[in-house]
Amino acid sequence: MDTLKGTVSKLKIIQYSQHPLVYFRLAETNCLIASHSLNFLADVEDGMKLIITGTRNKRGQLIVAKYAVLGKTKLMIDFEHYQSVS
Image (tube, rainbow, N blue to C red):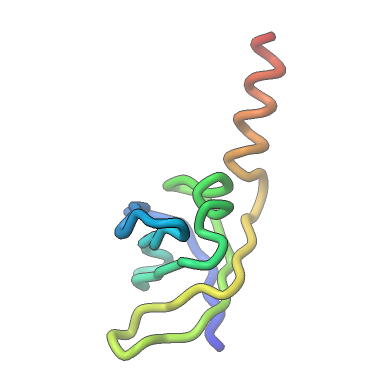
């Protein structure tokens, strides 16, 4: 298992399905997440800092098993913004 810490960039959905496949770059490493990808999309956006754990595939991409957002998640930020507007 590899662990990486860095800033998310190039976040995009590669495959639309019941469990979407999401691609992003973290610390110059290509990463993929399929399990919990909907939660990931609700929590993360470009520029956020993360710590991820996962295994590498044959192409050298990191397949994410666990992730943690450093600071507030996107959902928390949106909720706070919504409360301040109301």
